[in-house]
Image 1 (cartoon, rainbow, N blue to C red):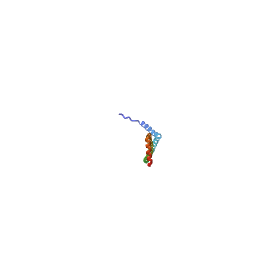
Image 2 (cartoon, rainbow, N blue to C red; image 1 turned 180 degrees about the vertical axis):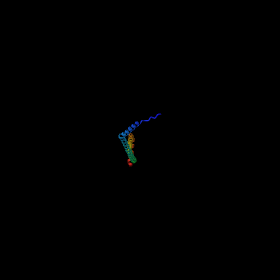
Image 3 (tube, rainbow, N blue to C red; image 1 turned 90 degrees about the vertical axis):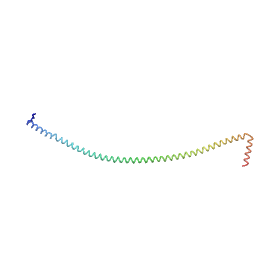
Image 4 (cartoon, rainbow, N blue to C red; image 1 turned 120 degrees about the horizontal axis):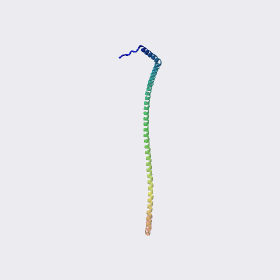
Amino acid sequence: MDIIKPELGLVFWSLVTFIILLIVLRKFAWKPILGAVEEREEGIKTALASAEGARREMENLKADNERILQEARNERESMLKEAREMKNKMIADAKEEAQAQADKMITQAQEAIVTEKKVAMAELKSHVAGLSLDIAEKVVRNELSNKDKQLELVESMLGEAKLN
């Protein structure tokens, strides 16, 4: 294997071309590339600072949310307690009102029963009186239909009248 040795002129021109390329790259490419890298670095630092600020703000918001949530829980508990008390009061009031109405209805029913009883008794007395009159009329007719019985009745009545 033969190693090929480059000629001195080729090495010189390669070196000159490389140096010119370095100078051109330094003048036109190196500064914009470094500027872009620095700008990118600043952007990353700014983004990291913003992220840190956002993280702190999120922690603050989380703490605020926890506080608000605890307040909401406390308020909910107080509202539930108040609602339970109101429900119990409404139930007690309804029971009292129902009992009062039941007592009133019982009193009215008892009064109605007494009134109906009085009316029934009056009707019964009237009916018994009517029946008694009908019976007496029939007995008297029967007694007065016979002449002997009429005389006997008149004498007995006169006898009673004398005694009184």
